[in-house]
Image (cartoon, rainbow, N blue to C red; front, side, top):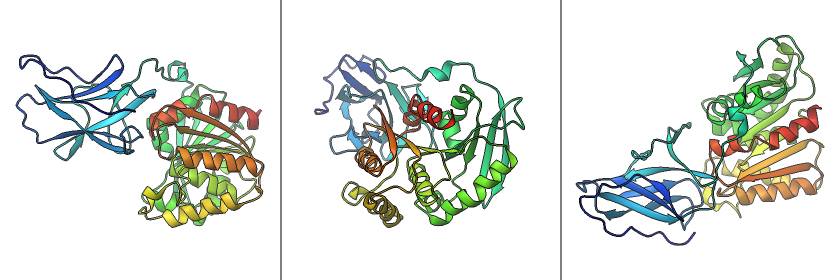
Length: 349
């Protein structure tokens, strides 16, 4: 990336401009005309800082604080300001993206375009709630097709992926399907960290209950992000034949060699144990189709590439896609097309 540098001095009467892309630089600015803050940093959840994900200090300038970085090779980025230990969005940037942990400031890099399906007409629909084996499910179906046999897309972290990743709107612009939004519950790590009890409940109880209420064509496809992608692979790996395909976005396929920074994660041993089982396998028990995507600025990129290559070696047909983003809902939204489209065409048509 090159090194960060502070801006030169400006006139004390010149008001500090907002954060912006300026030529070949991205410039973060925070107004503090009285220099009341003890310090300010910019936080990124991606490989932008020289030492990986983390914070970069802003320099004190006339009117406030500033950080300049060479323009990164990204489509867009999310960030927060850390001011005297308090994290918050950039008050000078009105562009925000929502997430499970609150809003982040957002900047588009030159040339970025949001997915076309966000601007396409969407079929209206309705959601139906049910709870099976302590798993809360919301099933979205297109209006006017109640009782029809339709394909089924299951989604880990479903409500969040609908709210922040647009998966229901995506489905509403595609040929008719139902979308089962699976809740991770209050103990997401317990449920999604390669948990045999959850995998069994999903395959043996949740899936039959959903398909019993909603007539379904074809075997379902399971979509997951981050730890939800790990849980998706785990469920399919331990129950061959349950799913026609998987879409795994930025999966948490941790290994001790590639992910030592995760060693304090409470389920690290369980996750790495399952990943090791997959990586030690000589042949897959199922021939399901797999689509994998990841952001190029993620810590998970290396372990995703390792998993992709091995799944191909054991006989699975694995497609691959990258977007120039970090580990975010926007990354997962932006990689639905064309990768999920292609997967669904293979297994449902």
